[in-house]
Length: 553
Ligand code: AMP
Image 1 (cartoon, rainbow, N blue to C red):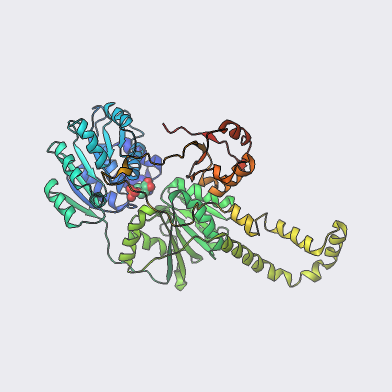
Image 2: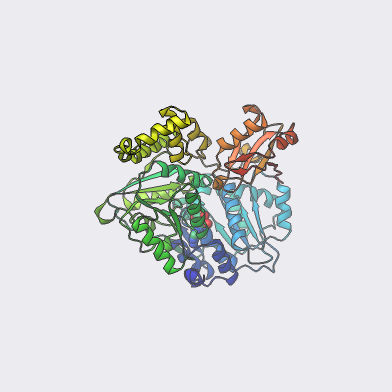
């Protein structure tokens, strides 16, 4: 266990932080982490040129937590982010990485939510504040001493903050933090406005950026799909239906993700296995041998575990999670196109990772075309094509070998040859749907088939910033089920189940949000108890729905 976190262990992080990193299943530091962590631990100011997807959050969170004093119950670390989504994400990351430490408090401060609870959390002695600049300035106006104990400041996605018009707020915040602080600035780009901030507010900063030397990629057909993080498993299942692969390697970032995806694939009948740093060497070799000789078709691996895999059968590389840098992307996709064969590489990109895609394209000098998820019709066509491919060689001698038996079956069952063929087909396909309506129903995901769009926090002054994040229509409440994307659930499935079994009109049901491990559905408040009673025994995708009223506060 300790062996594969050797990379992290060498970084001088606090033992409790190392334990947390090991618990989340990271196998080795990403390049930006390997470079930034020692610099931040040493107390230097730093400019990090890195985009989302490089592991930049942990690059500052791990060393900052290592240097935190949990016994001091006052703000010590301030992270500024451009959007509330990012603030929440960063705050969650801090909570995850500080799980093994006691007495560490993190508070997220952002617009669009009431100030009261944020203030309360601040007063309860949180040491880490993750904030959007606009809202933090609102708090500062009420309490100008709020940041007087802060010792370390991180500007995350500094270029985005400037684009959103937060320059003046940043200046106010700089003034509110004592001189002598450590300042770390992360930005995907370094336009003059960012350099000027760095010149005025950072002291002899060290520069850190991921290597971007040109990489060559040949004979590999590359494509990407825009997808929300919580739709990844569904997207992979759908892609695999239409991609004609021989063997495939899917890359994810954590050990847990290798296990989760491999079992989702196995459940769909694929010959799949996980490969991660926890798997013993001899077992690892068995997995690779099985992939070579066709006992396995899919391996779901982390970068570390996939090192050195050379299996000529691999026709496809599926990047389910983004690689940390272009070099690792090129490395990953080099697993296909071996021995002079052509290969195909697919990359799933979440809205926040689009920048990373651009970097990959720049460094490799190749465009990675956008493709859409196959629709139900394409999935059906692929299934039928496979069926024809499988049946054709069998049909040649079928009549002579089973002619008499067929006559007997038709007579004994008392059915037409068509009905018999149809029944056999259903058996042969293991119940897999072969008509469009069924495929549409069974296909997980994609509420609103368009590419996902990022939500931003508004610039200060924009009235929309003050609104609740996702207002409910009047008379509606949110309900939650523990079924999510990882259970193969799609909005359509939930909608279908609630419409059918709850006897509601379509208009009565509001937004449906599918997350990885749970889903939220907006339902009418009136008659809710009765409705939940009706749905008590409802099952979706073979699992119990168990819908409950969800209280946000
Ligand atoms: P970020 O670039 O900070 O948005 O991080 C992107 C994703 O990478 C997050 O989901 C992290 O949990 C994950 N991540 C960060 N560092 C590592 C690591 N060393 N190993 C595996 N996953 C990581």
